[in-house]
Image (cartoon, rainbow, N blue to C red):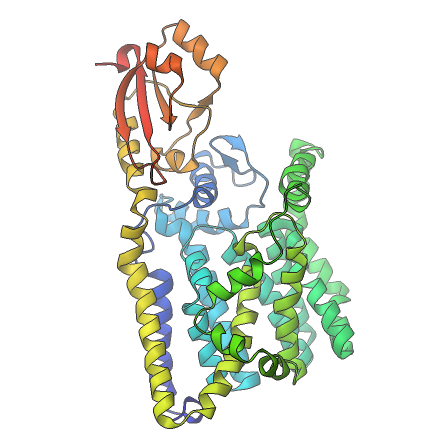
Length: 473
């Protein structure tokens, strides 16, 4: 029986699909150490927020860290406070919950506007998207941002094509305000330009109303602005100049821009094998997407941010994550048409292939990821244990330090420059020094080597712990 005809049995089938979603997003969420520099940059502020009790001013290794607003830290900090632990599963939980919300809000919206089969394929495509599922399981900002930006567009979508209840617009701007509190003004790029282009293309006055809902703008400002004002009054207004210079201007206009084709290639890779149908019949797919204002809305929501971000010099696949639900919905429309055109035997084959793909993703995250990426994390608990074995001695790092070391040590590690290190060695201080890769000559000459760890974060890299004074055997 075709999925689109199911009425009573879909409950069982959807329950299985929901369990598959939970398994891929949540299984073993705390069983693997932090895998990236960025995960640590989001986890250490939670750890330090919990230790200091200061929930307003984020810090990273006890240095001011306000390049990103604090909503993610607050959402992870609440369970961290309840459990008195900023463990891996806690700091990753906001991303997993955000991915779950995106997936099933997309399902219900697609079910209502396009039917059951496209809705089911939307879920299947999201939970088998490499880029989407990876960030569903990471302690990073992007999935939360994706949920809030897509949530604002989804609320606008419901207003435009539903009952035109202004409460949908209130919800859209509430979500937008929370997005501003997650990653700042970049959130506006996923809401304002797509709605402007949609209004220009279809001339629906409801689209313009989504942009001129002044009560909504007040809601967004009421949600996002207080934190920015408090930080400005507390630290001074000029504190934002460094953030703008490094986090915005530096990424937008750096001299060596990444190539324009990077984003299309990343999208294709992340949506394999589903996107092969679109690549095989691109004109038919685009015509299908432009056939109605509803699917046209999804197309614009997917394409416009890609165009905008392609003009920015610094490119990362995760920057496009808020567009992934729209891309998944568009692909689902194409796959659903293909599915309906098949005979029953072909449909059974496609369903079996989808089941095998879902199982493959689950097995990878349940078993394969830890082993495949062992070089990224296996040294971290050992380093933390070794550093903890020198109680009472100050611990330093030379020149640079990956924040994962700070996270697993559970406390700050001061970073020494060459002059600082020389001064301490000349004073014959007793200390422990953590060095990534090669150590400077004065360390090898004046300090003892206590332990070496390889691989460290990357294949071919190592980390060494040195000591001086009473730290040496």
